[in-house]
Image (cartoon, rainbow, N blue to C red; front, side, top):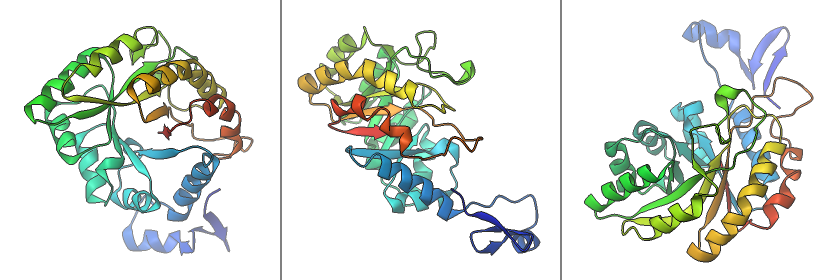
Length: 272
């Protein structure tokens, strides 16, 4: 659902005549509908209501401060991939304690800044990055909360260039190696294990890949919860922009398919 409509042959965003906006500000011009953004957010939030969850908006999608402020006020968390994105979230009134720091290129300065601001979790891509974060945290006399990124080796049914969750992709840690890396993390003085993360790809327009990935990762999640009392399982991945009317963005049926897969591990699900 969106709030762009024609009235008397004139395109409106909610109740605003866009021709008048163009006259005032000139073109090209980007106009966003707060009503549309909130509608999609609240529908997804409602679909996940049976689970303890936090929806983290990917700031890289659009870092406009007005949009960040809108989502922060709605209770959203934020998925960041840089120190600059964290700065924008905080400037917009967002809560660092609801931010997860993802991405493969975190600099030492960005990690230090995120630690100082108290981000909820670092999504760790590899054992080498885990050691890197531990070393930086030790210089600040702080503990870094982390979630290792699992690679579930599933087909996300998307373009190969935006697939990130199969064994052929360079992202994350293979499931058979994951327990050993967590064991190492548990021995690091400046690391606190808080979750498990996965991200299987972008522009995904089917629920099945998520269900398949959750089913594969859940047994390990249960083990880690028992051993390390982890708090969340992040079912990351990008729901695709819906170009066909047959697929309604934000529809509850998206998530009903894999509710059973989540049920056994739903101590907390955090979605990106």
